[in-house]
Length: 133
Image (tube, rainbow, N blue to C red; front, side, top):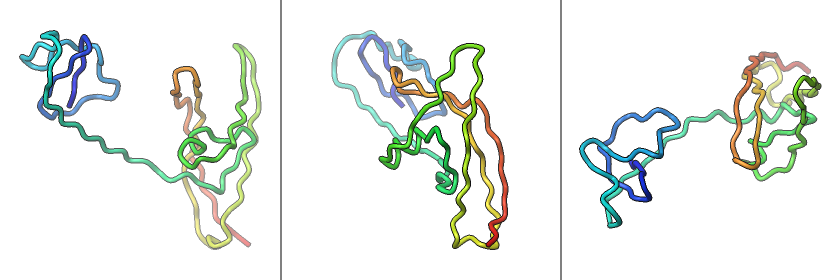
């Protein structure tokens, strides 16, 4: 793993780091990262575990996360100020190939900040339905 401090990097022995590791760390074990510029060995890896998007779920506000992954352009955010409320309509258009099957998953209510290019998951609403003809 890499730790960054004062624009220098150092190799750290592999270990589990919690999400959001402190990028202002100045040491890695007994190594001082403030020792100045130079060439240091770095070994990095990452693993992502993600679920597929349920394309049967369509909202009038779109889905910024799916847009970013699938290069679509559905995002039409509901922008609310403090104390305001709003409605997002969710439409379910099941795949006809799934007739007779039960579909389940979660609907996530998220925020997205284009300035910082990040977002927060505010709520998870589980769903389950059987596709009929």
